[in-house]
Image (cartoon, rainbow, N blue to C red; front, side):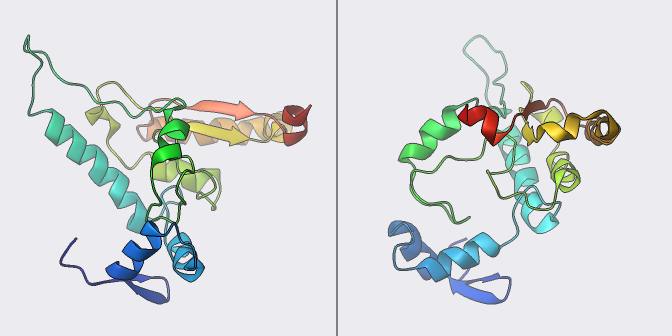
Length: 186
C-alpha cells in the first residue's frame, strides 16, 4: 500500500496523503474527500471491486491463524461475529477510508456496514456468499433488516427464494430483524 501514490474513486483521484489527512481530521474541512470515499464501491452491493476485500480478509485470517496451535495442540478458530461489540469498538476507533467518521459503529460481523448496501437484498446476499466461510471454523453472523411488509403472505415466497439462494451458495447463518421505525419509537 505504501507504494501506491494515488487512488482512483469513481471520477476523482485522491492521494494517500489526502486520505490520511482527512482521516486524522475526521473529515472536518474535507467533506469533498469523504464524499468521494463514500461514493466508492462498497461491500454488500455485489461489486467485485469491493467484495474482493471480504474474500481476502477471510483468506488472510484463515491462513494466519492456521499457522498456530494452542498450548495443548488444538487449533485456533476464527469467527465472523460481532454481536454488539461493533458499536463499542467503533466508539473509540478513528475515521476509516470507507467514509466512516470516528466513533461511528463498525460493520456488524459479516454484514455490510450500515447503509452501505444500496442495491437491494439480492445484491447483498450475492456479496455475502463470496468469501469462503468454511475457512471460518466458528462460522459467521449476518444480520439483515427487513420492513414488516416483506413478510406479508404475497411477499414471503420472494424472501424464501432469497435465503434459499444464500444457503445454496454457501451462506451459513442469517438473523432477520423485521420491525418498523414506528414500533421501535412506541
